[in-house]
Image 1 (cartoon, rainbow, N blue to C red):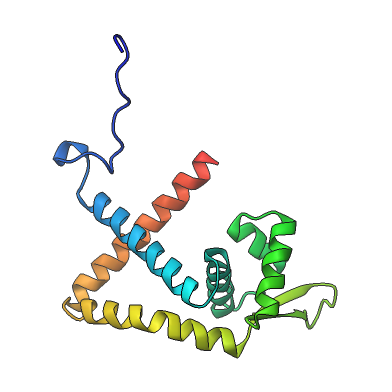
Image 2: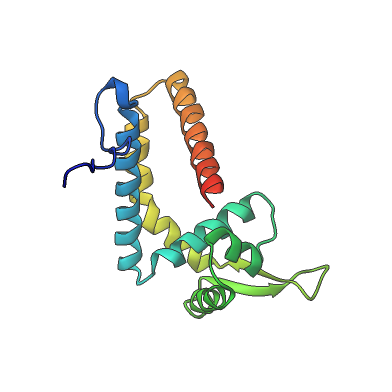
Length: 166
């Protein structure tokens, strides 16, 4: 078509120093491979990606000492209230989470992972952790500190981009 040009490629489709750093493509490839791993691992345990993500959210907040409520899970996973209820029902019936009343505010329901969830999560992610640990062993502590700073900055940049576009 005359007069119309194709939209410019995204930074992930371009190559060369003028279009950004090659690390952008590597980060994209890592994200794709990590997603494939989660999909394959979840499939083996008959769990959907949303179920796996929910358990990761619960585990992360629990490790930080935060109370995990259905509302927090809904917000973190960007789900509707009915979808959140269905998710929690699935995780409850599969034996991965339990609903408990908060100790000080009996009206508030909190979600806790069961020992089964921790055991299965460990089994699912142990091979990945082992391979990543082996890969990391080839780097010095200083290099790992730099990569940690870099990955933290990339996570922050991704959150900022999501927040701005929402």
